[in-house]
Length: 333
Image (tube, rainbow, N blue to C red; front, side, top):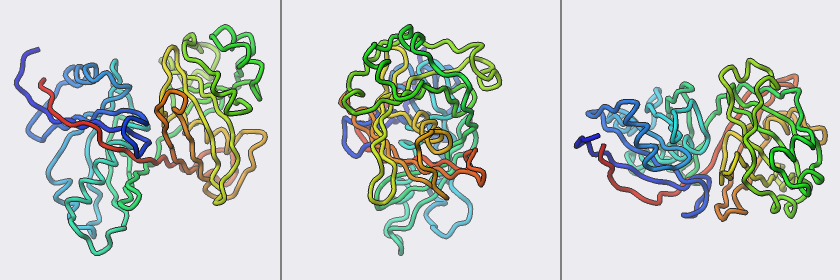
């Protein structure tokens, strides 16, 4: 492809305040005067070769209009979230990284407001639909309301199946409960595998066989197949303010992800609503997940889940975290 279109990009490490930790993300800014085809967007994502790349469609009115903190309409931006192979409806760390950037841009446009600690609100529109966000200029974190359609499947992973998919005998033998299958949304499924200690978590290895769940899960949650990953987790109790603390590792095939927002959302939904030993609480419950330690990319993921009155469904699910800028430059397409 030969063209002279020059686009600016910024890369971030997400779910961390330290560079070279967390989960890398590229945000490619497309000005109002430029138009990209879907093929060009996909080529850009392949070139960065990150787990996800965001195509951010800029427009001057969003930042200019946000100069007035009393405005009633939210500034909004269209985004595309791309794997190296396809656009996806939603993913956690791309949304957090992008909204931290946008929140900081709004903050800079406002200069020195009368209430410098006042939260900044906006909205991004992804393939999943509108996603409102709130940026905290004090903590420099963003939180988003996560689209969800949670389904805990009847299927559990047997010990023989676990060994077949590549789990070591020491891991299989130490599982606290038979692993459960849970879908956060249609087409996104996680195998929740509880381990008894951080020490046992260290022995988890990538290089697992891909899991084919066709015919084994509720079919309406994977009509066109489903992404499936193992989530290994350890419950660490609660902090003084009641926040539930967890350590996790997320593995799909030969890959270990340093920070996985969607997997974290699925895990806390299971814990809050279904885990046999989790103490149910009234109202919103906060969680903090530490992931990626064992691969040198420590990440901290913040979540808040509000169940419905029956405590059988998720009413509201918030995902939050920070992001730090690592690189910036230009890409020609």
